[in-house]
Structure formats: C-alpha cells, structure tokens
Length: 609
Image (cartoon, rainbow, N blue to C red; front, side):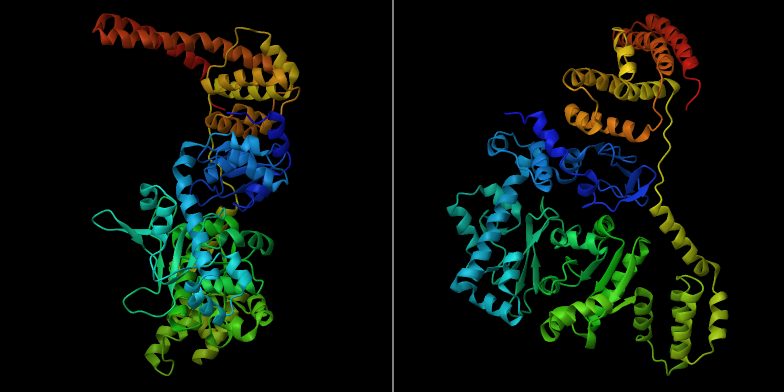
C-alpha cells in the first residue's frame, strides 16, 4: 500500500480549522481557552467534549476519545484514514492525487458496509431514471407536477419511482450483484425458498440519506390511496438504516441550520422539499410524526432553537402538541410553533400562496410553544360549561407555572383571564397556591439548562508519580532544553506504558521534525488509544513545567519509583509461576516481599494532586 506523504497530510490538515469541521456536528460554546459541546460519540446531558483551536485537537473528558481533525471524522463517520484525509481536503479545497486514493486499503468496517452503500446508490439512480426518463414513470411525474415540485427539486432530492413491475431485482441480477448483499439491504422481500422480490412497488421513492449525504434507505409513497397498504412504506432496519435515528434532509439542512441558528421540523418529506423549493433550506422531518430520543439528541448537536411546523388539521395539531412535550422535556431547546394560515399544511400553502408569502410566514408567524399548548388545551374544553372551564383553568395554570415568573406569566394570565372571564388577581393568587412541585418546575428547568450550557468535567485524580509523568512529558514536547535533559539519560523510562509509548514515538518524531505540533504528532502516532491520551494531556495540562529544575524533580520522582515498579512486576510473575506448580511456601515468601515493596512504593504515592 502506498503511504500518503506526511507533508501532504500536514498540508491538508492545516488547510482547515478543526472548529469548522467539528462545528458541523456539534454545537460549540467557548469556555476559557477551549470550546465545549455535547459529545457526538455518546449521549450526555452536560458538555464534556472539548476542542482546542490553538492546538487543533479535541478530547472528550467523559468517553476518552481524542485526536485531531482526521481522528474526529474517522471516529464519527467510520472513515478510514485516507477517507478522512480526503474529506478534510475537500473541505479545505484540496484533493489527493488519484493514484494515492486508489492505493489505500479500506478498513474492515468499510469493506463490510461499502457493498450496501453501493447497492443503495445504484437503486437510487435506477429509481430516479425510471421516474425521469421512462413511460412507467409518467404517473409519478404527473403527480409531482400537480404538487408543483420542480425538476430541480426532483434532481436535488433524487426522487424516483418503483413501478408496478418488479424491476429492481432483475436489474441487480443482471449486474451480478452478490445475493447475500441484496438480502441485507432491505430493498427486497425474501420468500421461504430464499427468492428475492422487490419490496417497493408502484410508489414514489424518497431516498433517505445519512448525515454525510449517502443513501441508506427509502420511503415509498403510494400515488393512489389503497386501504390494504400503508400510505408510506419505509425500508426495514438494516446495518445502514435505523428509523429511530434517521432525520430526513439533515445533510442538506445543516449548513442553513448553522447559519440561521434555527431548525424547522416539518411533518412530512413533501413539506421539506416544498420548503426547500421556496428557499427555506433549514427544514427536516422525522421518519413519521413521533419523535424519538435518538432524533432529538441529533437535533442537540446542531441547534438549540426548533420551530415545529406540522399540518394544521387535527392529527397535525395533536402531533405538534406531542412534539412540544418531547422537545421541552429535554430542557435543551427554545421551542416555537409555526402555524400556516387557515390551517392548511405547509406544502399546500406554498403552492397556493407562493414561495414569497411562504417565506414570510416561516419567518414571522412564530408563536411560543406555551401559547400553542394553551390554545390546544382550550380547544379540548367547552368553556360555556363550568366544570370544563374550571378544568381548563387548572390545567392552564399548571402550564403557565412552568414558564418564567414575572412579565411572561402575567401576559399569559391576562389572556387566560379574558378567555374564562375571571379576575386576573384571582388567577395570579391561584397560580401562587399551586403545589410546591408545580412552582418549582421553572427554577428546576433553569437549573437544568444552566447545567447543560456549562461544562462539568469530572475530576480525575492521579498519583504524584503519574502527575509527574504527565507534566514532564508535556514539558519535554514543548521545551527543547527539558527534552535534551531527559534524553541524555539513556536509562530513563516512564513508569506508565502509555507515556512511555508516547515518549518512544516522540523520539522518532523529533528525528524528522524540528518543532512539536500536537495535531501533527497525533497523525504521527496513529494509534487511537495513544491519540486519546495525547489529546487529554494537551487539553488538560495548561500548567507546563517552565524550568529544568522542576523537570529534574519530576525525573527524580519517576526514576526512584521505576525500580520498585519493575521489581514488583517481576515478583508478581514469580508468584504466579509458583502458584502454577503448587509451591505454597515460595508464594508466601514472595507475598511478604511484595507487601514490603508496595509499602515503599506507597510512600512515594502518599498523596494525589
């Protein structure tokens, strides 16, 4: 395998700012020298993911992952190193030579998934061709024409058509595509004899893409209602497609979401496409009207402001109410609702009112989630009935208790007073008499929001010896005098293996590099575990040894401990060997010696920094 030249890697890495790449996937806020956000590699409620712009590295203090911009993309998207270099190069306006790309060996995971991605790419092109270029696609073209979907949108979203004839399986059979691969795609139904037939028939096809823009599944819509079949049919769960995690159009929407700081949640695919055609680019949809925790967690990575823009009919209003409940439970979002005039759905309004008016409504017709919930609640009661009126007042006050005390509550209390024809002061008094738990909801929510915004990093305690190792290693990297002082002692070794390995890598690194750069050294190391250790050291160690005397103290502490550690390890091996041959007397003797050596070592490790 041809190795990518180190100077090429460094040139590509230097062509971007890691904040720009990470910022496409994580909301980052500056705190001190670093930027913090929710870790994209695991679910968490308080930010522990840190990026250092100066050093161009990242580290999660919770799950331990860390490295540079290439490592980030490799971990997040499952890319090989070459693919990560290509992706960063593309972002920085650079491109690897074809001969280098072709010479790289794909990772095991990439080899496993690449055929599935290839089949979905081919199926997307095939369905799209049928829609755009064939007689069989005429009904779907006519349907899209009636919905006023332009040819540009058909192309942008790669819409397709699965005809009544089952043509996909014969297509792949002709291509001699591997049978086992086809089984895993979810594009086919397998009978008891093991024969595959097309899953999607006579449906308008919406390719579902992952955040990187690769098709991973489909949703097919019937052109004509059929009570025997669902209106929409989605791909089943596969290695690529997880309905609970997928968000339609997130790949295209992310740039606009970052720019506007707002995400618009539509109810259906056609609403998203219609909005996109009207130049509203920050719209997405879930796979069905019920949001999942996994989808909401994906939202957290890109925005803190969400506008729910579902249909105006009764099912759409109920779905809006459910979405608000789910989103506000997270205490992570500012949630608003966009209602189309006259209760029509977004796609219909764009078609009847035009794109300009549609954009105006999207921009200006926002109402706070609480206002929507109070109106939705009011419609559940007959206010001419005293029992219903009292129930409405009690439930409305419970909702108002969850918002900010003061002017905000007064505004909603005045509206409630007008709705039910009760004095404002009596409603305010009743609000104050609510059970303690109801009145504490808002302060609890504010506390939760604050705790999510402020990074709360778990304290890590290291022994005096390990602290000495960590400080010394960083001093050696950044101070050539300290490096020369330590290297001059050929018998010196770090006690903990991860620091010794980094030390050995650094010796090789400085043979060809005049100056230390953490992101560049991370590429040189390549081993993920050591890259994570290095990233933690870089971000966690702001206090560097600034003189040779302090370095000497660290070296002394380490070297005094090293023989003890080495002897203890040797005796442990002898103890195990004695146990294997049943020599209990020798074990007792060795145990006594081990206890003595451990006591000596403990004297050097009496306190933690």
